[in-house]
Image (cartoon, rainbow, N blue to C red):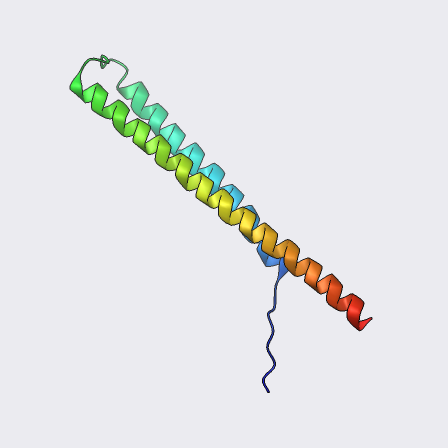
Length: 99
């Protein structure tokens, strides 16, 4: 009979959560800064021009994509946190049984 087991490094899971938080912030800040730069450079465009309308539409789509991406990262971070907490509870229960 083979021994089966799962080794969970809680510190690694915490690091993954922190990395997700950092990635979310970095992505949001970078893309928001880039979009702000585009808006600064196209400030003279009137809202009626096809170019400006296309730029606004693309910006809206990009912002929606950013929101979806950061929500996905938040969902993954929450799943990792749940897994980390469950692993800790299992470890505590196992120690109680052995002890």
